[in-house]
Length: 107
Length: 107
DNA sequence: TTATTGTACTTTGTAAAATAAAATACAATA
DNA sequence: TATTGTATTTTATTTTACAAAGTACAATAA
Image (cartoon, rainbow over the protein chains, first blue to last red):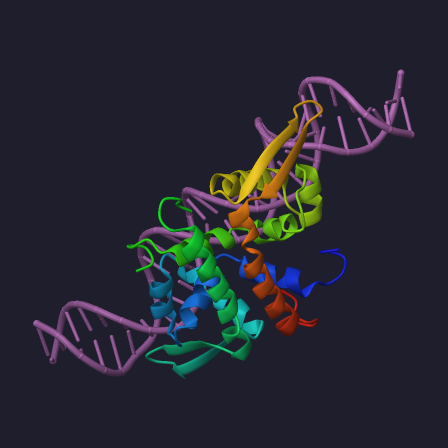
């Protein structure tokens, strides 16, 4: 079922389980950001990986990239409407995390 | 902030972004399952990976493993209360996916 | 004036993670 | 009696993520 027919829920999970995507989205929900700034906010992402994830999120229509100036380089990444609507997913994760991952059990 | 102080939301994201976890949880929300059965339901997971993820989910208290018989081997995996409460996260993902990933844009 | 810092990436080589395929040791079923 | 199914584990290979350094300049600090 999952592989044969196309399933939007399956596709959404595929997207959200891609490493760093949820962290990136969570940060961008707080406001637009430059590349390095975003990397620092997310914490621990590799430049290569971050660049690739942002490109993917952009082509899926969740993120918009705006080049403010070429030299010195300055870029802005921000969520699209579709991206912003992931706030509800993050909220659900937040509620669950606050309830079930308070201290002790380290992931 | 994310690395220095412990953050339950960050920890929850770490957990949910681990490859296959969301798929596994989504399947187990439909009911308990054996190892191979679960693997087939999830679709495409490797045995090694599935075993490792289940062990991780178990030690985090999201999944319970019950050995029904050693030989022939028969095991049952099911969600704990904490695990079942991820239904809300899956629901949020489902709503978002149905709205924003209808056809066309393949992940 | 000059040195330093910061920006957005890309390149290159390495380490970690996921994968496929096969093996195990038996019972139940055909 | 041969086949199928169970829950994993082993081994070797592929894919993914990583760290470190490099680029080409402007704005800022010394």
